[in-house]
Length: 337
Image 1 (spheres, rainbow, N blue to C red):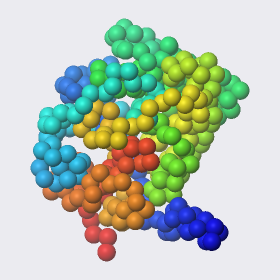
Image 2 (spheres, rainbow, N blue to C red):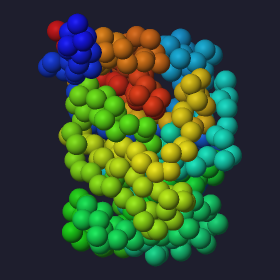
Image 3 (spheres, rainbow, N blue to C red):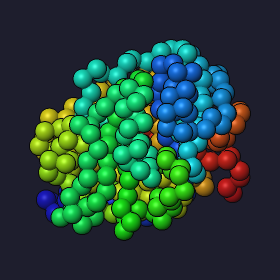
Image 4 (tube, rainbow, N blue to C red):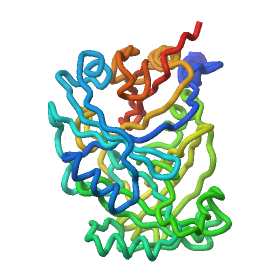
């Protein structure tokens, strides 16, 4: 009897064979802000992003997609290098503010990692602009860490307290395009990082159901990591995931300390701490069906047909990972018969 129960449990946990919900690209990350014009100015004038398009979205299809009745939002798409973010201000209803005591090991933590060609110059610019620090200062990860040694990193915050990271890769690490030395300071976005409780549970979702590949891993600890995250005793298991195109997704599991708080169970997409990872798929309908069968929580409840291209997709569904982080799975709406 015990063996039969074990076989049944393993069958339920196994990824679906021939998963149809394969991510083709990590398109962008959507960041909630309280004042869109202020945020545009910050990301453009301080970090070198370029404003691409602004639009205002509302209506029944948008409400069903994000699970917020009466939603109306202004969205500005901004580009840095080849990568993009979306700054989102909810005009109605306004969500709850980020907890003032948010720390880098809380499981609602998420950042985007901006690659710089000169860390000292970038740090000096942020200091001159009085940008809020989250790290003690730029940290160089030690050489004993073969996968991360020599990388320089620094955490800071935007005007809403959202975490951001600067990264500078040494010559032997990172994509070759991050080695540009043509005078450009802010080069692009390498990845977005999220804190997770259990890497293996997250891999069952991102790798086994969504088809992202594991691109690397490391275990980081020591005074440099503590000062980077501003978390005493920090020891992290870091797993890098990639699609065929776009920035990566990093899973940050705090092996120590164990005091990070979980994502609030009643988190809604208009709350300030709720970012969206926007994923491009060949068939969002198949993705929705597969994730529902796997009992993945869907914010949208079902696939939503959008009546405009305001979000860059025509069909989409919002889903939560095991820790409550939200992704939008979307496609162009073309026939998949």
